[in-house]
Length: 225
Image (cartoon, rainbow, N blue to C red; front, side, top):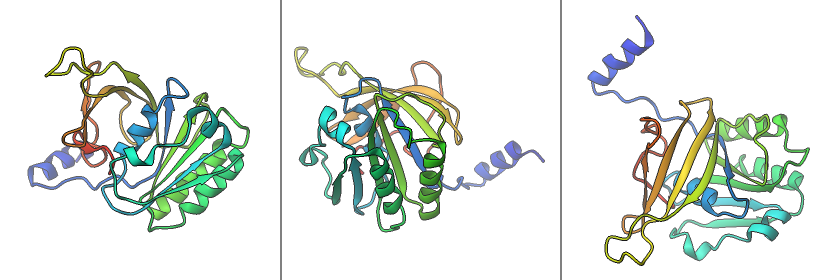
């Protein structure tokens, strides 16, 4: 009996597939200083009050700035770590992934430092999966070279949606999402819109009719956990 047939039978019996384990994902902002990749990564974090470890290298901090924690609309603790070298960021991320009490580990690295190779990303992915802790690597001004990240995204800011109450005012924030490589789902492209009133991100597939996995970041995921 084929696996697809088994899945259909289970679906008919009300069974749901097990949620995907947390792992390493990468986000490449189309404009290096754009905050869209950060916003998208936050929208994909688990819905818990557990703290987040957030690590930046010097160039990311200098060129893109520190995140405005007051604007994240979350009560979860954010542990900010400012480091200079990419090697130190990777070490801090890997060390943080040993802590199962964290909700996630986020790292920002500028460019393509030699230390950020396949082996380094493989170590992060294995640590994240072993601890079941979400891990995001924000790759600013970087090339999508060989990586062990399970999901790899390109993220760009789009013009805001029309404001339903004032044609001269901006509406909901929107981003374009391109899942260009994944080991867990089919690649595809989406437009994400942030609903501030509900504090949720909604997804639409304008290019290909593909939906995000319901067990991980489905339409309606809260933007800040």
